[in-house]
Image (cartoon, rainbow, N blue to C red; front, side):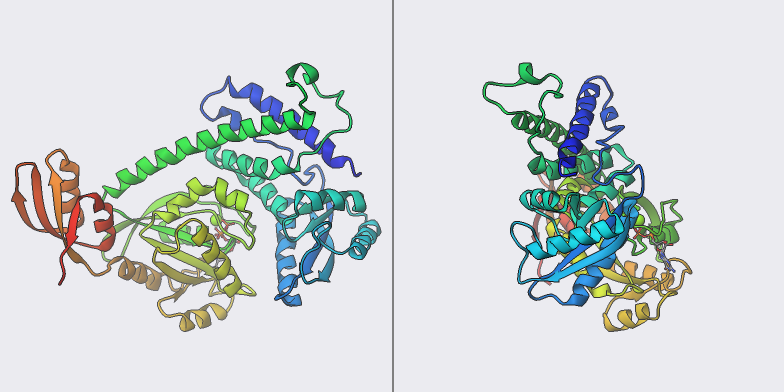
Length: 459
Ligand SMILES: Nc1nc2c(ncn2[C@@H]2O[C@H](COP(=O)(O)OP(=O)(O)OP(=O)(O)O)[C@@H](O)[C@H]2O)c(=O)[nH]1
Ligand SMILES: [Mg+2]
């Protein structure tokens, strides 16, 4: 049992071999067709799981219970059954074993009693803690991060999504690779090894090489997307991004607003790839609305890093529609978690329109909206409140305008055209090198034309 993880490593390294071999012969993203499939939980049957949470200083037992409720949902979504819970109150986690030694024994007893294969801890375990726990528990010890990574791996469908998830998995795996006791099974062994290099070092280098390749490919996609975004910014469309906690109803809302055929499911992280649709506001303006990946408490930083290129869509929006499940047990905690991730992707400055969804399920949605100025209560399911939401989106996008002075060189006919399209041009003066304009713009347009803005005129 305690050597299960090294053998998992072996399956994982075999998979890596296959991917590396395939990589040179397939088209652009062909090699991600089957991303590293050895997830952390065994998918061949529903694993039996014990959950473990620690209430540290400054937290209440209720915080821990709510967090474990969520972990139970995550485990279920990942395809396993949480059958028991063990909690402990501690000043801080034990550096060696996360919980105290006596508690480890208790967890082992619980696992034996319900015949659990795996123990899942509610916080990220250090590689050392994970190793010690597996040895003492004589079974697999995983953490919340591994469970979320498994869900993402199962739900990724696009080439980009798969590459992002694989990169996150490798970042998580790298420090956790272990020395195998038996090197003889290792194909290609001695010959491929540098002088004095252990098998572990060889394995690590291969993982790093694969990570670098994924990073390069993703940087390419990100650059392409930036170009597309620039092209879009020259178009008349304002962009709105739907963000929020997982399962809040973001995809349902995009469907309700635009009729988009997107995946709506009562499970966590149903959406990983962004979907953008055009929407006509009651005033006649057309805007672009994007639905994207949901957030969760303790969202693994490996995933935030790996999903940067997807999350950049939100960071570049004119407005964020922050969807909150108004029927959730603790919507404020969800909002805090979302704000934290928005901070990590530099999107906290973008104006937010808060939408309390699922008003049909709970009167809380309306009560919350009444207490939060500028927010709206809706039901994506029944359509209730959607007209108010559309009006609010229009209002928030129609911010007050200012007058700017611009200088546009002759070579940039595209910018002149954009100035006329997006703003109201008041005067045009012909000069030797280009055109000087006075024009009225909304702040977002002025930002987009920022390179050509000389100054903003005071009222
Ligand atoms: N009763 C009710 N259920 C809703 C409403 N909006 C969404 N749901 C349900 O909530 C669940 C999640 O909806 P999604 O639209 O997939 O949520 P999401 O925010 O896109 O979730 P992820 O993509 O997984 O992060 C589904 O079962 C929906 O049917 C609503 O207004 N009322
Ligand atoms: Mg969704």
